[in-house]
Structures are given as structure tokens and as C-alpha cells.
Length: 426
Image 1: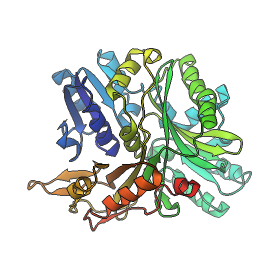
Image 2: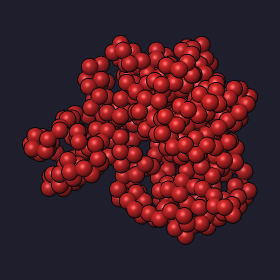
Image 3: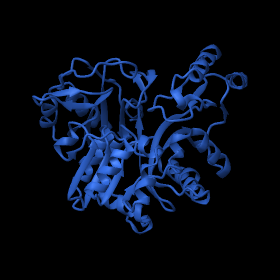
Image 4: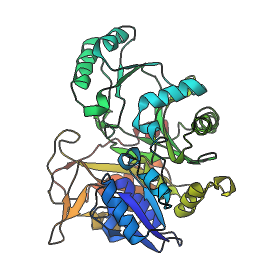
């Protein structure tokens, strides 16, 4: 099959790495890709949200199958355009992608189908929002309704801070994404990420992971797109799995179909494991980044086979995916200043050394490019994903950090406590 993968992050490098292993994939192209993806696939310099140009490429090159990695083209309706043209695509329609592109949409679905989630209010004006804040107890959870690159959530500790954040939201802090704001109760527990593939009627469970949203050690600092991840997640027991599938995932798939928006693609459930059981924090309509990187390292089945079955509506005929028993840890190296302001174009060396010294280490690129001389340069906020497998979490963590130490990048930083929840449990 001639396959086009859309996206340029660490998630897409991991997907490309896994798709490249499939005997079903004979020709793999990525748009726009990055320096790491370019080593295993052809790349085309077309932005993931440039829908007209992507459609022209797809029509011209006659790809057999398109895999949409990031959320932006889903929210813009790329899957709808491809379906209309008779092109096979893995990724939800624009209406179904509202599970991610509108948090208010998801909350309404939860209310309608009794899916456990946090109490909340939705506001488009600041005064009613401030009044609602006064009925809540701190800390407060504020969320931009729309897409904000994983940075649209703040958790103020005081009412004064929360009111200032509200003012910032409605003043354009997150652009159009923040013109509708959700205020939620703060849920106590431990976060986990769970993934399932849906074909519109059947939900095929994958596995769970845990990521680290805050920029700095100790879960401090601003929210980011994710500074690291690991799998398996010890908090995700069989009882939790059963609850998530029966109370959250399957009701979502059934509800979306009943409401006329059948969901075909990845259901990424951000969960809080509370004393009352798992509750939904939010949905994403695609693989998580950096969670995808650890999932792909653990997946022992053919990823393309899963995508084909999902597109065709045949997941009920597919065997359960096979998973490695190894633990996998992913450490994100980001540009200093991320997630606010950071410099691009700084040189990076040592990736080959990191991978050669340990066969269990793979470095997935995110924001990277090569200059005319072939030198590797940083080209984004989150730049590298150092993944390592191990016999257990401790082994994987040690291998990953040993690999990080070999990478020479003066302008980079990373957290030194990835997987601390799992290590503390063990």
C-alpha cells in the first residue's frame, strides 16, 4: 500500500517507525515530517493544516491510505474531504473530532450518556464565570474550550489568580480557543492516559500510559504538550480497565453513533483515577504525544492492519493487539524557554551514540531539521524523544537517562523525574 502520514512531531515519527515495519506498507510518505522521519520515509514540505495543498498532493500521488496524526487537520475536516473523494483514511470526521476540538461538546455528551467526569460550568462572558468561581473550592481548573496545543488548561490556587486567568482567557490568551471557557471542579487522584481504536461501533482497547504535563521536576511549572511518558501504568489495574471500557469508552462510542457522529479513529481518554473510580478529564481524537511513542515501542502487532480494520468497520473481526511485556519510558528534550519562547536553529549531536550504546534505546525526533551541510538543528519547542525499553520501569528509566546524557545540546532541557509515580509504587 502507498501510505501518506500527516504530521511532524514525535508522535508521527513513532507512527512512521511502526508503519515502516508493516509488510502491508510498500511506500511511506510523511507531510511535512521531520529530520528523523526523513531517515525512514519520504517527506513532503506541506504543513499538516494546509488542507488544500494536502488534497492536491493526495489526488496527484493517488495514495491508497492516509493516516492523520495531529488534531488540527482533523478539526479542519480533512477526513471528511478524503471520505468524499473516496480515499481511505484513518481519523475521525470534523463532527466526531469535536470530542477534542470542543471540551463543551464532550461535557454535553458525558451528561447525556452518564459518563463520569468532573462537575463544570461553560462560559462566554467573564462576570458569570467569576460568579461560578465563587461557588467552587480551590484549586480551580480553567480550560479553553477549543484547541490550544495542549496548553489551554491552568490550575490557579487562589480565587484572585483564577479571576486574573479568566481575564486573560477572555482577552485572547488562547485566541479563539479561549473565547469559551470551562471551569471544573478539581479532581483528586492520579492521572492516566488510556487509548482505544474505534471503527464507529466497536471499541478495540489498547493500553494505558502516564505522561508528565508540567514543564519542571516535581510536576511544577506551566502545562506543556507533555515532557515524558511511560507504560505500563501501575495505577491502571484490571478493575480500572474494566470500569474505563464499560463506563467511559463504550458509552462514548455508542453515544457518538446514536447522535449521528460515529467516531472512527483513536480515542485518547485523559483520566483521573479517583477513590470513586476513573473519571474522564477530557478526550483527544488522536494518539497522545508523548504517549504514542511508548505505545508504539510496546506494540507487537501490525499497526497498519489495525488502521485498515478501523477504516473498514471490521474491528470486531480483528484479534486483540499483542503487547511487549517490557516497560518503556520516554523522556522529552525541549528547547530552553519552552513552552513560552525559545530559540530555533541550535545544533544537536550525540543521537547516534545514544542509540548505538544501547540497543533498547530509540530516539524519536519531533522539532528537528537538517541544514544544507546535514547538521541536525532544533526546530521547535519539544525537540527529541529518548525512549528506552527495560525489564521493568526502573531498568527503562535508567537506560533512558543514560542515553539522554550522551546527547550534546546546550540549548535543551528535560525533566529528571519521569516515571516517578511508577518508581514510588515499586
